[in-house]
Each structure stands twice: as structure tokens, then as C-alpha cells.
Length: 281
Ligand code: PXL
Picture 1: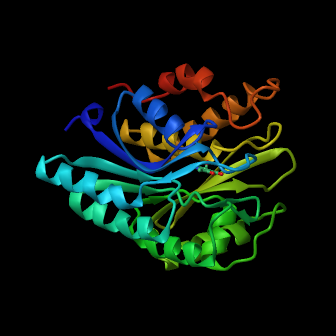
Picture 2: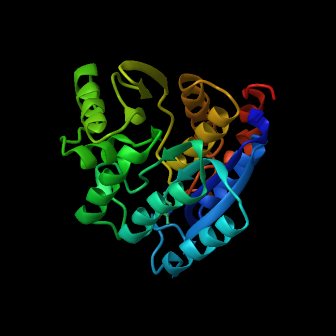
């Protein structure tokens, strides 16, 4: 199958407003020229960061009905990419989904999407972190930020002043959980720069960008979606990581001067740059 014919399934919530999860994953992966099916884990009026009284329609009971229909229709996928999930039961369903509709040589990209800046998102607890850590061994590529990696491994979270020894201790602990390939986000070796560590087997590489402005919700989702798009289009893991990091940084730059957009980044403006950097079909 040509790369351009590969089919991705992404499982995460629809935050109707807020520029994150499925409202960024679907347009970004589609813009990469890849057929993208969605499995919404929940529908929320907004994401849970910075909004109050969020309306939530939980779809936990509906997920496997959708999947079982696909099984009957012989529908399958080359890639499963999971992001924000609403419950431990949904984490358990990921294993079933992988078995039922992901092709044998398909890849599972797991973004734990549960915490940032040293704290868990609203509604998650220690049991959820443990359940997510239990899913790590199923992944082909794991995309945690530093907070998520520390929570899953029990290593102390340090906001800054990281060094290779600290990063590689975390990567080693993630491998002990069963991870094979990891892109660890949010690494700070020096002032003014932020980066990723890409671990493929025993090989660790780093990529840093300028640290621009403030943090936004949904940047992890934009990273994961553009990484998935680039990887499925044939980039190496290292190149997909660089493309995704640059995409997010440029998205932040495009949003910084916009007082009306504090809730997420204006990724739409950067899609042409992303598309330009993909491996030709
Ligand atoms: O971007 C991660 C995310 C996705 N979905 C929901 C969220 C968040 C982060 O807060 O609340 C519902």
C-alpha cells in the first residue's frame, strides 16, 4: 500500500470549541493527505482548561458499538492515534480496538493527554495515570510531555534545568513500562529553548526550537496530529518530530498577538507550511 493510501483512526474527544483534540486532529491529518476516521470518546462544549461548567456527553458506552460495526463491514486502519480519553474503561477499550480494527502491521501512536506543567487535567486521578501507564506497552510510538512521563514512571517532575541524565532516566523508565519508541516533549536544557527527545530503541536524539511566548491548550494535540501525518506520509520518526515541533512553534507565533484566541493556537494558518514539509506522495 502506498503511504498516501494509508488510513488513520483517531480516538479522542470532540471539544466543540477550543482548538484541541478532534477539532485539530481531523483537519491536520486530513491536510496531510491522509484519510482520517474519527472515534469520539466524548463531546464537550469546550475543553476543560480555563472554562467553567463544561457540558459533557460521555460516549464510553457507544465506542465499541461503532467499532463492532466496522468489524462487520471489514473496515480496518493502518494507524491508531489516541489522545484525550475520558475514563479508565476507555483506556481498556483501546486494547480491544487495536485488536479488532488495526492492521497487523499497523502502528499505534499513544498520546497520554492527561497532564501538563506538573498537574493533571481536571477529572483525572492517580488510578487513571496507572491505567495509562499500563497501556504504554501497547504503543508503537509514545508521545508524552514531561509531566505525563514523570507521573507514569514515578520520577520527580522538574519544570526546567533538565539534562541528558534526567531525560535518559525518564526514557529508561518508560521503556521499562514497555515503550519501544518515545518522543518526550517539553525538555529544557538552556534558557529560551524547548525541545523533544526522540528515543528509538537505544538511540536518543534531541531537537530544540526557540521557546516562544506562553503555553496554550491543545499544542500537544497539534504536535501529535502533525507528527502522525508526517510519519504516515513517510518521514522518519526524527523528521516527523522536527516537523511537528516547528508546526507548533509557528502556530504559537501566529496566535501570540491575538487577544481573542487565548484558548488554543491558530494552527490553520500554519497548515501550508506543514504540507510543504511532507514527503512527496
Ligand atoms: O488538549 C488536551 C485536551 C483535550 N480534550 C479536553 C481537554 C484537554 C486539555 O485540557 O480538556 C477535553
